[in-house]
Amino acid sequence: MIYKCKNCGGNVVYHPDKKKMYCPHCEAVDSEEEVPSSVTECANCGAPVEVSRYTSACKCEHCGSYMILEERVAGELTPHLILPFQISKEKAVKLLEKEFQSRYFTPGTFLSAATLTGMEGIYVPFFLYGYLGTFDYAGTGTKVRSWRRGNTEYVETSWFRVERNLDIDFDRIPVDASIDMNNDMMDLLEPFDSGALESFQKKYMSGFEGEMYSEGLMSLEHRAQEKARRDAEELLRDTISGYTSLHADRKHLNLQRQTAEYALLPVWVYYYSYHGQKYTYYVNGQSGKVLGKTPVSKGKMFAYGASLWGFLFTCMVFVKMILEVL
Amino acid sequence: MRGFLRRFKVWLIILGVLAAVWFCLLGLHSAVGSVKNGRRQNTECTTKERVFDEAEVLTEKEEEKLRKLIAKRERQTGCDIVLVTLNESLREYAYAQKEYITEDKYVMLYADDFYDEHLFGYDKPYGNGVLLLDNLYREDDGWAYSWLCTTGKAEGKYSSRMIDHLLEKSYRWSKVSPYFGYRAYINQFYHDMNGFGAVNVNFSVPFLFLASFVISVGFVVTNRGGRAGDKTTDARTYVKGGKVKVNHREDQFLRKSVAQHRIQNNSGGSSGSRGGGGHHVSSGGRSHGGGGHRH
Image (cartoon, rainbow over all chains, first blue to last red; front, side):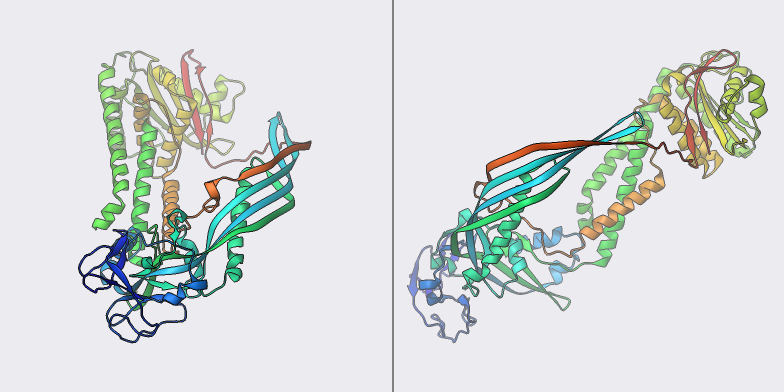
């Protein structure tokens, strides 16, 4: 299906800044109406559309209209939640440029010479898992204290029985359910503000691309549990302090799944080409966090390193001279 | 270039502030010096000479430069500033005065006597002043000793830490050339007398050079762009309310044990070591402060 403008017939899209449906052709707001279409051709221009197996929303290459493949976000495939894009295309580009400038050794010409070869705003499928974690811990801790008297050093070791029982309420741990997306990158893009999640409405997808999950809820759960386990370990450590050494006698984390939700989260993907190399960047469509490696200029690295050395050294010498004459 | 300036703006500001502080301090010392001290009052002093280069480590030109510097610094500090270099054993000299004395104190006796005999002192005989005795001769124990003798208000101002610092600094500069070493002594004395005597640091310049290099390399390595981005979640990101409910918490004392062992006193020599030496009375019955250095 496609959202068309009641006034001018143009393609109505969701506008992240206005937070409304918007027609870029006649600038009307909330003027959309649904027009159904088939999966194989564009509802606007009739051109054939090629979609991959998991695409749920795409752009027609001929007329630039955004279509939503309704049957891939309906029935069993209906997402529970969606986090509408909050960062617009223009803002994402600005964030990228800012990030490139802030990186110390990115070549000065990168911004001007790199060509943007493509960009996509994608709703990436995620599963959000909620757990009630119960952490049971028992161990032995030691505290060591030492002091001197005359020529003798005394070392006192005290042993303690350490027991903890914690309840940890994990809420909406995200795991990306797309085969195409790099798992590590998606993990690094976190956090997404779960407070901004809304019940799924397909109109938010208009103007963006989308994917449906390509991996199952059960098969991905181990990744959520891993994250929960890692966090739980750290939270447990936070409650045990002051010991010189710690030895666990019993340690058991029970994770009981409370919720599992299917959500679409917003990600901008930008493709740049620079001196024949391809660079991919991800921008969190909600928080604006930027990810991606930039090329490194050796000259800049050397110049900055040497300058820092010079500055540091001069400052240290000044401090030394000042302290000497104080 | 604009990018470069933007990046190092903070450093430029820090550098500017430090330079300003430095020049303010120099100005302050100079101002303190010119206001505080009147003309030299001591008319009984037996000599106008301040540089006694018996070991002949300085050229005529260098001696002349040091005399000029000393004349200026004397007015600014209100203290006589004397430099004596020697290249002879002071063993006989010391034993003639005292029955039992260690090598490091030979120079002390000589320096005190030298000061007293010439009736040095800016305000009066045996008055305000300082004397550096640098003996190049290696005594029986294989060390060459030097001594800083402080008298009058210099004695009051100088803690043994400050003496150590001055001698250490002078010794370090003397590795470049003896002239630099003695110039450092005169200038440091001037700053110490007009400053607050608050902090004396003994970081050597090569150490700072190396330290700043290591930090810079660390900076380059951490920023070389091998990473796509930083992790921005923590253990509490997905915990409801960010809080953990603690159902049970127990830290029960079981037992303790105490082990003891004797500490070995380890001693080792170093190439340059500092001697202590506080206030004492010279053979002539005059009060002096001072401290030594050996290398």
